[in-house]
Length: 249
Picture 1 (cartoon, rainbow, N blue to C red):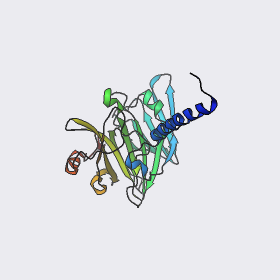
Picture 2 (cartoon, helix red, strand yellow):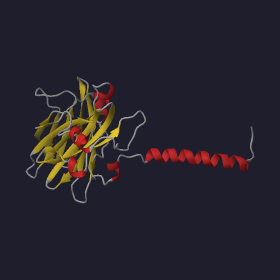
Picture 3 (cartoon, one colour):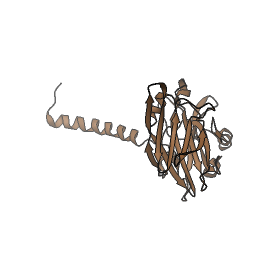
């Protein structure tokens, strides 16, 4: 079947228009909170070092007078995150998931931001030990320091794998941390989104303050629209007081 130039033009325009709509819909598919202002953060790259006499690599990132070192082979006390200030070790931490060479190779950035008088370093990285849904877990680790340069470690795991996971839910200087968990309600599965703040070196759930958590159906074709099939009292019951794998020290 053939067509002249004018006829082909009329056939192709609707098809191209439809393709563009699909591409744009994919590009702009967002959870509701992703339309809000995201926290602006600094970032510095990690450099990975391998050694001939040691199969485990290390990754190092330098920010001003601070250095963060991630160890593929933990210390005897289990520590695999080291924070230095002006060359002096000031904090050791244990990440929620281990750092193997594959993780260190993928972990490209150390993120940094200031909140009031606090300086916060954070990383997020994949869980290489899980399979199935557990293989989608993301390890998160925060090093939150006060004006006296004393740091607390906050660590947990969740499923939200984007560097922008702090958003302004009201017009002030506070940015809430979004945490994504997997929940079953009735016979259906959902992604549940809770909100947290770091207060005095600890994670505090502030979801109810902003009408959260919200639940998005877990579907084969990814969905971004919250469900209205779960009553608010049940959402509050499903809400995580603290994220999975949470610990602070």
